[in-house]
Length: 381
Ligand SMILES: Cc1cc2nc3c(=O)[nH]c(=O)nc-3n(C[C@H](O)[C@H](O)[C@H](O)COP(=O)(O)OP(=O)(O)OC[C@H]3O[C@@H](n4cnc5c(N)ncnc54)[C@H](O)[C@@H]3O)c2cc1C
Image 1: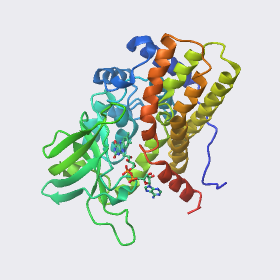
Image 2: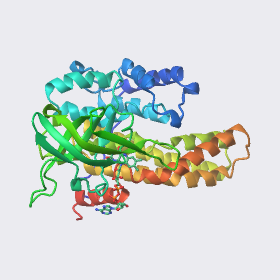
Image 3: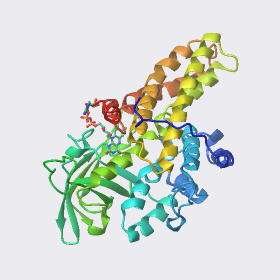
Image 4: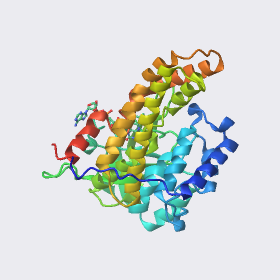
């Protein structure tokens, strides 16, 4: 195995135990029986309450509204929210990746204006990377930002933009120069985009699960002020790559359909049939291994590393595991004798998990592309 690849066996520190209890108590107070409903995932009021608890931007410096807590503490909060299906959609992207990008690359006055509002749960962000014809191959992006007096004029189309219809801001990746002969990644820049600015139209795209959480976003002569340029002009590929490490390795990569596993445990009851217990044991053991790997990546991010390969492995294994989960739980459910409420609950969760399973290996980077990244990291291509 290449020394470039490693998963240190990181344990969550003791302060995480009390924090976990605190989060659970909060969720019990906020959600019916401590669990949320997936279809009500966007809830600004809930995000404001989470902000008031200090659980958004919790690793950021206090001068920007953060709490200077550790990435592993943040991991625990995220894990509890996702496992409980809490309605985090209004703040999740800002907390996970947009805020950290702003923290690193935005001018001081933008950080001072925006980051405290994210921490208070007031702002929703979306990610403007993919375009028609430029999904996996981000560096083929064609939406152009052309310099004008006091800023840039943007024309082009982004697609699959989750939450664009509800977002206050986007972090957009736009072309500011053609690719260089020796570096096709050159020529892209990253911008903070005010989604209410003139020249931005948002068209919904409906998913087969019935959800409508992503969109096409069309820019027609939209103006972006100069101070909304983030980082280096033409050099955003480095920023976008490190942003993706945050996006790919978190517990959201294997907890999106956890509901159906919990429903199966309830359906099988306290003394499941031997073969059902064995199957359930396997699934839980696999989940545990995924979680250990994900915690390890979080520890590396906390230490300032950029675990791009390890993050890609977690995303690949996590989404494949989740994608196979509906078929496995359906087989195991055949061992249950219970009918009634537990069965109805299980069937509803199974239906939803089945409908969202196909997208899991596409969002956040497709399986094939992630394997390409892993192969490159291992020196195999
Ligand atoms: C639910 C969901 C939410 C999303 N949210 C956002 C968002 O908020 N913002 C955003 O910017 N994007 C978002 N995306 C877009 C997502 O990240 C891209 O769709 C994804 O990267 C794939 O791009 P594509 O659809 O253009 O497919 P393509 O890139 O055209 O890929 C098509 C197929 O070709 C394969 N392929 C492509 N290149 C290679 C290669 N080099 N080697 C081997 N195989 C390859 C792919 O694996 C795939 O199977 C979202 C997608 C989904 C499903």
